[in-house]
Image (tube, rainbow, N blue to C red):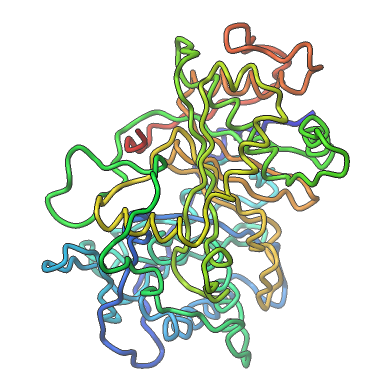
Amino acid sequence: MAVVISSNPSFEDLKITFQESTLVFPSQETEKRSFFLSNIDQILNYNVPTFYFFSANPDYPPEQVSKRLKLAVQRVLVPYDFMAGRFKLNEESGRLEIDCNAAGAGFVVASSEFSLDEIGDLVCPNVGFQQLAVQTLPDNLGPNKDDHPLFILQVTSFRCGGFAIGMSVNHILLDGFSAKGFNENLASQAFDDKPLAVVPFHNRRLLAARSPPHVAFQHPEFFKPDIAPPSGPPVFDCKKEELAFKVFTFSPIDINVLKEKATTEKGARISSLSVVAALIWRCKALSKDDVYDKERVSTLLNVLNLRPRLIPPLPATYCGNPLLVAYATAKCHDIEDMPFSAAVKMVAEAPARVTDEYARSVIDWLEINKGLPCGEYMVSSWLKLGFEEVEFPWGKAIHSGPVVNHRKDICWIFPTGDGGVNALVSLPPPEMQRFESHFRQFFKSDSEIPTATNADASAEIPTATEVTVPVVSPAVFC
């Protein structure tokens, strides 16, 4: 059956020493300008830290990797000049913009006292990996503690000669597909004589609101905050909360089992994402409250790529956030009682709602209401992004993924490398215990699938260490 992976607390501190922390600038002069941000961009003002582990390569020791990557960042900041800029508020419009002022991106070099073998399974949701993708330049080495680059790249070497590339990127800059293109270009510029792998498309006004705005649909997947910010767009506000982190791993066999449970018509095609998301939704809905409320409405949001959905389609290399969410919603007792196939159908059919006109209506609704996503849980899939395919001079990453972070409202789904699926879940410890119980018992026979009231939190749970840390958790989902 599917397994649950927890961290080894012995390596929550990777014994990092920072050796260099600086700003790097475009290798050529770039145009000074204000960079337009769409209404979707505006609400994604938070950092997404990621990591990419590489085995030792005798032809490219970590010192050489750092030099090549520093030069590569300087080169790639020419076509991605906005990533060397800084946010600014347009006082007249109240909109956030990027001042393309070549203020620089962050570049950090560090080393760990451990080897990769000592750290163990890199899939583990290790809190220590936060040290591999710092979100601010280290105070003791940074040029200006009041300066906050929108993009920071970090190279961390390990005692074995292996190394990690960590990136902290504000989500306003790039979505997943944009990040894949950026990584391909960064890798190309780390070679001696390669051109850009892809040519990024930067006209974000293709996702500007219409004038006048025309809202043609109801949009329950968004809400308007009761208290508007004094200036600028609303932000995913946060509160401090203790979270546990776990990766729920589905093997190819597990995925097939879920698809069999979800199949009602012979020959029907069911995606891996649909079955995983449906199960994650079920576990989250039934585990949310200390006291189960069967009448509570649970809403799952599934992040969609708008590029092929608009008319005409956006360029495949559109750089920004052409994203919206498809929603599936039901009362908890319906989620508990309905066949798994029904939940999968709700998740699978939700994206069909997001047509060109629907997407334009959302953008116009955001123009008027300055709202935020509204749902209990969001699924963000990295299954088709292909980060593992990016090839640097020293080879491809042996493992990559999102760094555990403060976002308890998002489940990150990424590939295992062998056709399986990993789901990174971050929840308060009591809720995580209930979530894990529902997850494990789902894979028993149908007659034994638990209800929200009879789930046994201790059932068949192998030895695993619960990882809990005080972190910041968003409080904006209605």
